[in-house]
Length: 433
Ligand SMILES: Cc1cc2nc3c(=O)[nH]c(=O)nc-3n(C[C@H](O)[C@H](O)[C@H](O)COP(=O)(O)OP(=O)(O)OC[C@H]3O[C@@H](n4cnc5c(N)ncnc54)[C@H](O)[C@@H]3O)c2cc1C
Image (tube, rainbow, N blue to C red; front, side, top):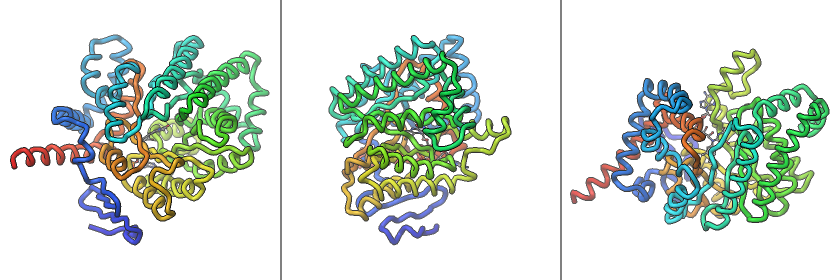
């Protein structure tokens, strides 16, 4: 057992076996009664079974390979998916099915970020227009609810991946600031490509405009590095237009990239120059293996940090940077890392800022890290669950990322299993007494 230097700040972190336990002056993430109060015994047992299954590398490996294929070939596995991994990580197949889940979270002062789970759409322009209309429907619905202040979107839901990739490549080849490179890259596009890009811009604009009208924030997800530059450009343009005084648009920074802390600082510069409030969601990043494999295959330096410690360092430094500039930055700490969440809470306290300061928000994915979400909510933090919904075939890529993230290889499953088992035992003992 070792004691970290953070003890001086009231944050006690001690390592016991392979688990890290943290206790903070105002609250603890160890309280499983608070963490799982919203789940019945039957639901907890179901979750335990699912995490036990994801603890088997063989099952996860083949599940990830075979599920997308089985869905494509319309094999009868939808029922099984719906009852297992889907119900753990997804709100429902449509908005109506998702509404009761969001209401249940509200009862525990947990907000929801609605995420219409379409990504990498392949239904052409009509499909992208349809997705845009669905995003607007989600915004209108969110505005009618007391606890849904955000929606989340993926640019690949309303843009052709290959076009984003081509624009990203052209941006890489040009020199100067991101906006200068953008102008140069567009100049090299054909007339049709410019028109297609304009349609993407117009969809994003329509979404952000409606969000501003309804006072709902739009979180733009970060995706693969080879399409990310156009996503960043468009996000910054939307922030410059809609984040005047209030924060409607949030871009995402993936701190597993070694260049993102510098990018965060550049975005703040841009925000100051153009007089808008920077909205940023901080994540570590979900595509690490894919990024590394592509860099090897195509023989370019990996955009990913050399090790986990470097990712953690940049993540926690980014949290500190945002809180240091909280007048100009609205930040979402989107993480399942105990330390990063407590670090943010600790910094707020040190600076005398309220846990529910309008420029700080915490968020975890639905189905994961309830011990963080519900304990933060109990302590008065502004916190949400990222709640995806959509037809099973559309959310399969998301579900496969969750399976991978929760497999025994990443170590997440052990943590979820320990906490769920502990809560089930606590309830059993209480019933015996
Ligand atoms: C609300 C919310 C929104 C999200 N939005 C996005 C998004 O828009 N885009 C996106 O990509 N992801 C997104 N994510 C997913 C997120 O990136 C993963 O959940 C996250 O990577 C897991 O990290 P963690 O902060 O929970 O902490 P941890 O569990 O402590 O960290 C795990 C992460 O650390 C990084 N890592 C692990 N090993 C190494 C290594 N050897 N070298 C370098 N880095 C390493 C990886 O990113 C890995 O996923 C979102 C998550 C949440 C909660």
